[in-house]
View (cartoon, rainbow, N blue to C red):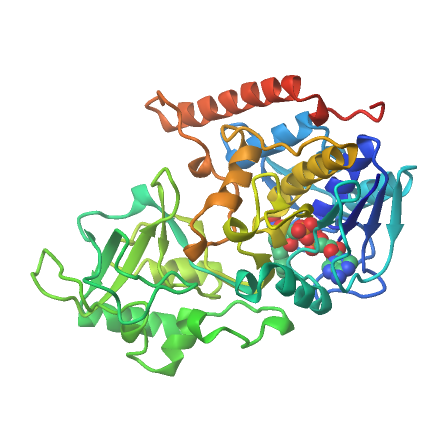
Length: 457
Ligand SMILES: Cc1cc2nc3c(=O)[nH]c(=O)nc-3n(C[C@H](O)[C@H](O)[C@H](O)COP(=O)(O)OP(=O)(O)OC[C@H]3O[C@@H](n4cnc5c(N)ncnc54)[C@H](O)[C@@H]3O)c2cc1C
């Protein structure tokens, strides 16, 4: 009985801890420092590659709820984060050195954990008594990525994330936009960027010739974010950032994501000169993404340029557009709610490469993958968590979202099962969702002894 885990980042470290805490010996393979990545700077486990923030820490915030659930499940990442906390208002920010040190030392000193510093170039054989967890993150090495493509199918493995901005629905000026689907099928079939295939139900922001000219001018003069070297100019043709398209010609966008064809503005009775489409982004309908609007313009400039779009003058952005290296699988096609690979249930994926987004979400997926791999090694069945919990909702999203438009997601209240009788106030609704989640989690822990951390099994 043993578990092998590839990748000693946030997900892999948490998974290793969960297995060891259940009495299952673990071998954790981490390629640093033998083989560095483009962004990690140390040889520590669970190195935070960018910000030192784990985001909100209150229960009126979905990521705050996710963290509380992880604490209740004995998370090492949360223990290390709480022990290295620095002042950051309502957010949980950490001293990154201390955080990684706590995790590295805890795992290195655990009698059931063996840390091997080498690059794993092919996914090892797995079995029920010896499951394997792959948690190699957004910068999975090239050799392993090639092997992953063999297992999941190349068409279900992505290497770059081209993320469109998302706006808060209540900040869209509904008097300027109209709800309509493009007639018939679009000139381009639906693709990974979610260009309209005519099936959806869109909010359309119409533009006059003058409005388009002003938007175009602002776009080509906007400041582009500096990206890491490996990202430079290696975009998929089908997922080009809007500013790259704009630089190709003044009308390129009007034949791409801003094409007006098939749309009739009810205010004018005519096809607009250009149009931006907004697609509902979450179940709750309070987030809308700008279709095909992936961009790497700096965030300040991005807000300024996008607010030139009619209807978005006062838009609040839930997420800005980005383009960055990100290896991840198409979760809904590949994974089950337990983080097992559907086609090979003794193999688990966790962390960013499983199709989640963010430090906390990566660690959370590692937590459940670790519990389930340990269960399997003990001869028990892996478990899904209630969809009413943040952890369960995240696993459900990754394994059940629409595979045609799949994008990694942060945890939000919008992907959690709605309340049957939601309070009217938004704040009260969030608190009610959190209270229900924690009550359901406690019940789930009480009825699933396998979820408890005990080496004495
Ligand atoms: C540039 C960048 C910035 C980001 N900034 C943020 C941010 O500020 N906030 C946020 O919440 N999220 C951020 N993310 C997203 C994500 O949350 C982090 O990448 C997070 O570290 C993911 O956790 P993970 O465990 O999946 O991967 P990682 O933490 O990257 O861990 C994966 C580990 O696997 C190792 N590895 C890779 N291939 C192999 C192999 N073949 N054999 C052995 N080991 C291997 C790597 O060295 C690494 O240590 C960022 C991502 C990127 C790429």
